[in-house]
Length: 137
Image (cartoon, rainbow, N blue to C red; front, side):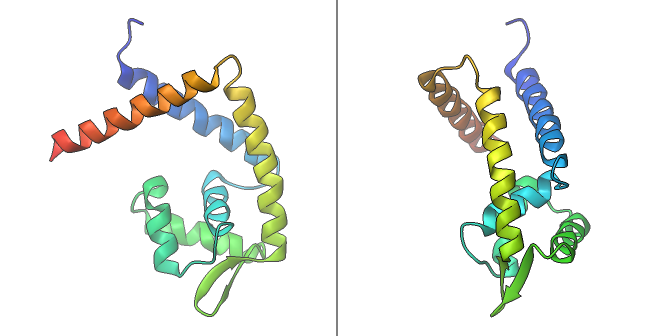
């Protein structure tokens, strides 16, 4: 434990992104496309609502968001009805296929980590994040 927490968080984040990219590439989805499908699987959203929901993952890169959304529309995965974006039947099938892969990967990633340990890690990271945000104001 000779490295600070920031080192381990950045290392874990990079490894998780690489692992997720590799997993989703098997079904020709990008991580950002997966995030979009995952959010739209919960409920149809207006474009602004989807943008707000994706902001924590994507930041403010409007061109990237537009490109990824256009790719999902082009694949026939999302459609717009009554001014709301929603998964098409094909999109829902792809979402469920990706979900199975992601769940398998999550299970593999948490191998050897107990449920209590995992919950404690999330709790600590959440509190540290809130503290850091509070102190940055």
